[in-house]
Image 1: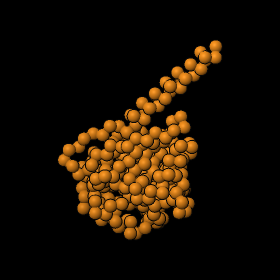
Image 2: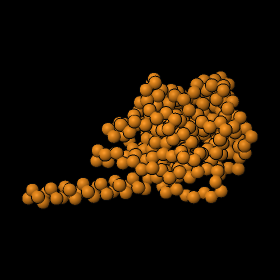
Image 3: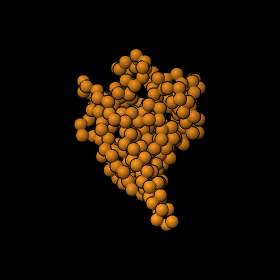
Image 4: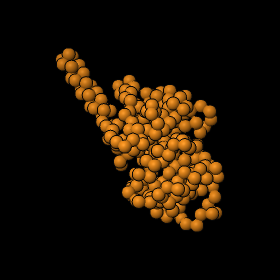
Length: 257
């Protein structure tokens, strides 16, 4: 997303405990285009890592089983493009199940655009045409994600409407340059590669959208503050809502006695 700004890619590398992590690039969502593959190797080729890629459109060139290739990595990095096509092709080759196994084994899963949304229960994609529409994801992470909140602002209203009516679960909307870090299924940190970029957590509770801005740690600074866990305030809101609902029901029973 940012050819001249390596901060997010460096952050991804930092998530692996390996000194020189093995990084596998999956450019499936963009049709395994040569330009995207070359751009990946140009970005990671001079870093302290071992970069490689896997092209599902050129399996004749692949000499090892897909499962073996994926599970020997430290990081799997998924590129952007069509989320609908991405998931269909992964499913056809059984790669979705392999990636689930990789996640359970502690391999870092990362990605941008469609490669970020695919891990969640759902997102908003333009895969079916020019208009954004909700789409189901792999469901490794709870909730939904929409990307390009500032770069493609037409996505955000579709996502908000889908969260409000229950088509998608609550989740996160992120500007370009913003990433979420998860430990297991828990969001533990939000980071940004550029000043001013941000995001928000949104949930539908009692028919209303609750929107909370994310605090994003700006990458590239010497200090590394720890962000509040993005889920904490939402859980508290839900707890208060449950209490109010019980109290309301209790008052109703007393009044009708």
